Length: 336
Image (cartoon, rainbow, N blue to C red; front, side):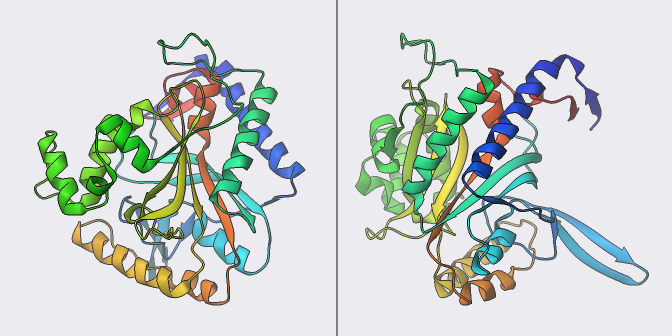
């Protein structure tokens, strides 16, 4: 890898800074407390769908493994339990094993905010107003990339709402009874030409989602709110009463995923059970097997009140307002 200087990106970088300032002003005006957090931790939340960075602290004969945090959640949830109230983190997070691309960086800026007494649909309302505030602050409207539509700009006046089940039925031709039954889903995916042998349900589901569903999201003249994901994709979220889905949404603009939200799981026993499952899966698929953050479970035992939180990739968000096709075009310095 090498360091690349991009002075030609200065105008786009300034839009990125304006987006950050708009976020800060929005949350400050709504009395969210900004939290400064460590980016190194001796333990992490087990999330099998991502890989982490491992490093080592050394002092004389003492050595201890530390891990760059893939999200600030393990710290913020502790503070929520302690009564800090509505809060947010805006800073760096890290994820390994994803090669740099136009939408991915192993080091990225994340906004994560939590609202007490809220569920995922309350946060959806909050995020939509945040997007409107950014549009006003930047004085930049988002170009509509769907050339079939006559509208030149994407409207932030409302969400285009679609459940995951509706999206798979509409864009992939997969019905509810096929989507949530693992065996039936494998058979359907194989019929469609996907490789299923040796892959997990999560792997195959993600293949279909990426190829057939995702490119259609946020392409209908409005940002798309896609909600109620299979419970397998929401280790930290409350489940719905159907026993199949969880209270999770993601939102998209022009086919780009920008944020991820849960109604937060508050049952420590259920959370511990899910952590153990995720930890075993991490070991099985040969990813870095870090210690489970047991302090997180201890915090939940003290009682986490109902709340919801969202994580938003700030570079991606700035990218759509700056009308560039890569997060690298926002930055003055890139590691490539």
